[in-house]
Length: 266
Ligand SMILES: [Fe+2]
Ligand SMILES: [Fe+2]
Image (cartoon, rainbow, N blue to C red):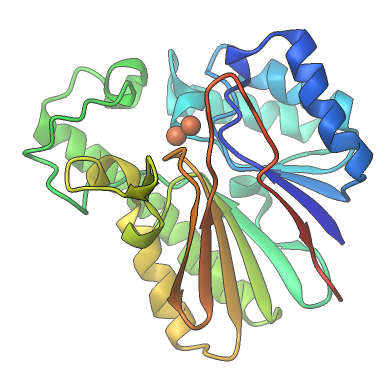
């Protein structure tokens, strides 16, 4: 089975001609499914972009959303819109709603947006001010302390999802592939070619999700977890445990590209 993984494609930065060109790089590879790790567009264009991708790629598209997908909108409203379009769609699958997807007899796919939960690095002294804290309704106009409470809630939501779904998936599959937007480990927070510092880590890493992965996979040393993430726009890989491998996708605004072609054997 062949999967194409793309992430942080930020299609709102390109025109229709460039979008066509990008899709025309994927189509000849004949993937059985395309995985999109979030930051596809922004709140006002995310549904149209997904429907356009569906029409052009004409194959199953498993996706999660990134922080940018909620810009100029609210997390709640965007997720409602996504629920509506995916209900009537042949190919679009929002993994937070879909749950476990069997890919082969030994590998399944799971996914959730995740959110940087402010728990790593030095949140209170960090001067990094993501647009998230201005352009996303649930995170804007808040003092730093209240914003942290909301970031932790979003991180915990992802962690709870993964705890339940991954526990279930490991009962039936040897290998679980996770698609998520935010890196779950410090070691996967690549930024401009290096690991992120204490200023950026609070905004780049979902500690709660990472802890769930480590806890569950320690109990299952003979099974494997592969995590595909993005968000930091700098590519890298890390091996967290002998059975946890994480890959972070690189990105440049206005120049979407294919991260990887993944072949799964039965
Ligand atoms: Fe991004
Ligand atoms: Fe992002």
